Each structure stands twice: as C-alpha cells, then as structure tokens.
Image (cartoon, rainbow, N blue to C red; front, side):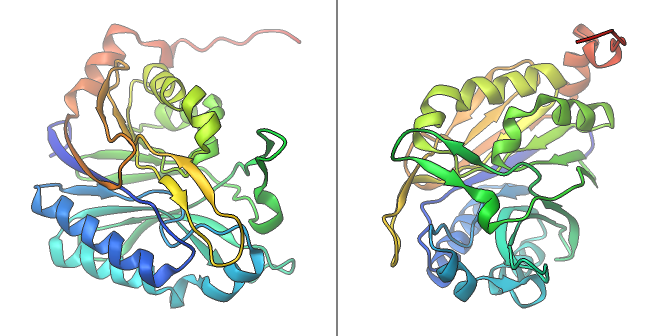
Length: 281
C-alpha cells in the first residue's frame, strides 16, 4: 500500500565471474527473502558476475533477451508475486565499440520488466597505486535517469558510483521518488571511508528511503587477480538513520519500511521546494 508498511529484503552477494554459479546463489537469496515476508527484494550491482577481464566478460555476458539470469529472476518474481530489483547485470549491446551496459532492472510481480536503468556514471578512478579502475573501457554510460511507479511508491533507480552525484538524486526526489535504490559493488577502500556517510547524506538531502544492496568480500576470477568489495548493504530512513546494516557476510537482510516517513521528513525540512537561482562561479 502506498505510504504504508513495506518489508524489503536486501540480498548481499559475493559473486564470482561465472554467471551460472552466481545465479544459483542469487535465487537462493531471493527465495530466503520471500520466505521472510519481503514484498520488495533487491540484489547488488553486477549480480551476474564481476571480472577484470573484458575478454571473459564478452564470453559470458549475453544480450538482454538471451540472458539466463534475467529470465530466471523474472520467473522467480512472478512465482512469488513480488517486486524485484536486479541491482544490475552486465549485458552485451549492439554498440559499434563493443562496450557492455551495466543495466539495472525493476521486475514487477507478473514477471515483466517495469523499468530499466543503464548506469550513467562510470567508475574511472585511481584509488591507489594498485587499485585502478577504468569502467568506461568496458561499459558505455547511460544517458537517462529513471523513476518507476509501484503500488508502494515511486522508485528512483541508480547504481553505485552515482552515489557521489547528489544533483541526480535531488532531481529524482523532486520528480516524486519515495525510495532510491543504490545497488553497488563498492570498492573496499573507498567503501570504508565514504559508503555509509554518502548514503545517509543522500537520504537526508532528499527525504527518501535509500536501499543499497551490495557486493561483499573477495571475488575470485578464473582469469585475473580478483577484487574486494566493501559489503555493508544498508537501508537508510528519510531522516538519515541507518535502519539495518548487513555487515560483511553474504546473506539476506530484512527490514520494514514505513513509507509515511517520507512525507513526514519532507514536511519537517522542506528543502526540496527551496531551490533558488544564483550567480557564479
């Protein structure tokens, strides 16, 4: 019910670079969340697999209409009658340069795709001398922000690095978002320093619930050195308090949301209506 109670399940994963292996673990997590009463279940960024090898990704990724992870999770959502956010999948595109899309899917209870969002901001950073990322070499950025309508409220869809760009969250909130989703495979170094504070800030600034299902731990690769992610899937309330933190173990975290708190927070501090133009710089 819009504005009322909602139980959500955040599935925290430690994926490999093998989509078939990851799918079995993901399905188990979704079913555990459903068994716990969740009506809205969320998985992390790149649910189908993490890999530093573009050649390997090209071998195992599929186009959207041929992706087994997507089709199976659509079936799971339909069987359980739930809303399911597949945080994102790496999918092949028909782009001339051969780059992939990092695409988030919101699945409706009838199994249909209610909304798609392609990650806009690419993680091109030098975290340290040994932690260097060039996401844009493998993935092409999206160009469109997405707000999806559900019976329990409007969902603003984002992915991971987007977290550092507050103007986009503000636009989603001003367009009517009640919940902001931030599925992530957040780096373990930047995650320890910035993950929680940025998620809390985005909730406070927008008066939205922020739901952030995350990858966690060490992700082995058949080709490549593997990588580490921060974990700590979070659910944050519109006033900024952390409602639940999944820690660093894979698993399922259940949390109850009272969607009426969105309106209460915005009534107390109506900053979304206080924009003013200014000059410079």
